[in-house]
Length: 508
Image (cartoon, rainbow, N blue to C red):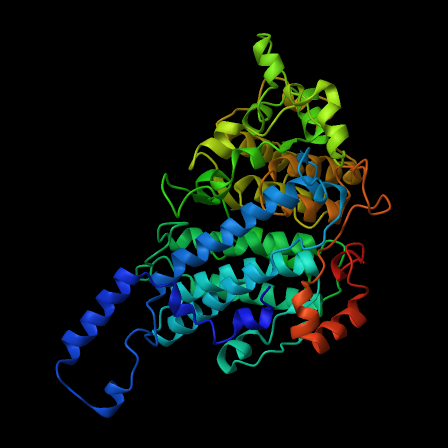
């Protein structure tokens, strides 16, 4: 595997994302413009590797690659550890917490190489809107890395890109969070919808700068809430006050106000812009089933989202009485084969939505529902003067509407859903139970939020190999031990043993 260093080095130039037809056109244009001028510097320039690629050529690949990595990791690991789904055959190791080789280190550092190049070009060309978009993507990707691993190379990543040095130091998570919050604030200031400057290659928001500005501030709310137990731990960052500043001034700090603002990559019907799970073998898809944890909760509430997330069992459909049955997490191959009578009596993920169709599902970065739940929790904690109950109930409605559903009559009055007025601790828990449902297939967010709150009260998978402990982080890739050994060891000495049970700074 590539180390972070190799991923960011000049040996893998970001300009190589250019397709051959477009590259040929650029070279032809260069010849036409240059004519027969045979100056020495032109003769020695390599026309096949232009110095500055237009940001519009880098942006679509960055978005697609980063979102696909998030979707794939959600499917293979995040949905399992957060107990949305369960693995039932052909290597159930990940569901049993054998996490050797799990992670997205190399993929995301590859993406960051291209993001850094896009930001550099945008600055050189004085295109602040594109620079702002780059800072949003950089912050999101780095948050995924540090939230999964803890301390990671951060401040030296640009130096590595520029110099080709191969041994970046790891930054403390506290310092990374300070940098991410600062970059997102800068992005908010750079992004100006009134600026007459189009954004090319934006396959997420189609060049809508206001929506990128909203995403910058929505991500700030997510990161600030991630620091809910670290209030005062970062010098110069007042978590509650900053959260309040953002929500109190929507003209200066706009955030999502409808599902139309969702940072959700819409896929197409042809490669390379297809839902990534659509491209795997059907046999591999069928080895994932709905977790008993999520399925039982949604069944108890008669929640309409269950039919969007899952298929009824084959046996129940054949009998004319469609019903959903989840599977406990962590069963061995033999036990999962026999559970509840076998495969025909276990619900798979919604096959049409999450496998057969190349574009029915979306690649979720962040949604309006999550923003509402973040604001509801902040209000319940006393950070803001907003109406926590109203925001909570609106979050449920937004999540259901995202999947074409509406809140059923009586749903909000159920004991397991009703907002507990006058009890802040119970209110925070109630908000995060619904937030857990809403975060289905949103990267690793369900796991990250469970790790912060303990909601829902997950039990370790039944036949786990991790001494009945749910993992709290990814291990660093083995390549770091050989290619960046000194800095890797410093990180381990500071953070703790490089295993899946070591608390990172956020949850210490």
